Length: 245
Image (cartoon, rainbow, N blue to C red; front, top):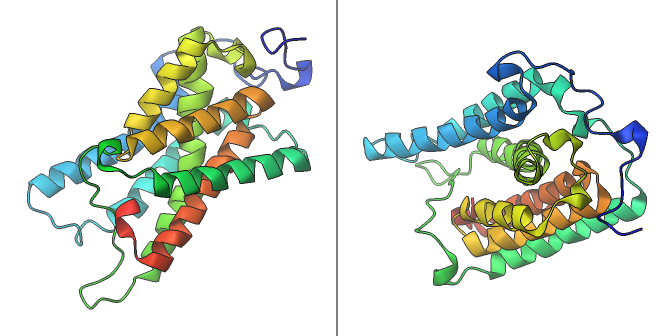
């Protein structure tokens, strides 16, 4: 049986936990996956606006924990909609594969940094105070947000929603392996240009997409994404490479 012919086992249909009727914009399955991402992006826009108004990066350091908390609140509000997050046990081999992919993406992320592979300059996130000391509470918030919140929020939006929605608008009925090349490519490119290191972002998007499509389990992509972000956080703190944040 080819990948295009595969069908998900009946117990794991991704629409199984979704209400059969939708009433209004905020009750839609698409909205549940868009709003957490939109909330995250809104805070980025707010930070950019504050910067243009003269607010310093040091004064905005606590905006990131607020942003992460806001995304968590939206995710919790829509938790019943996320049928793809209903736990499906990953085999040891799948977990190992996801972790290895996450590590490989990290290595590439740190390597694919030529000037033509970047959009503008990243201000990064510097948790050191005026006295030069690292604020470890800010570090903990940043790593927790990047490794625990962002992977869930982004994989719900980019892989589970947008990639499948571009294939067919009733995306909950689209099995990941059946998504065509154009929706995958479009999603990967958009995901890449969401990041300052756009080329590394595209590579990461390809890796996470292939994991999801091959396994049919969004947790594979989430675990890989979390591994990349978590280890990147450790590397940033160890080397003071704040621009990678």
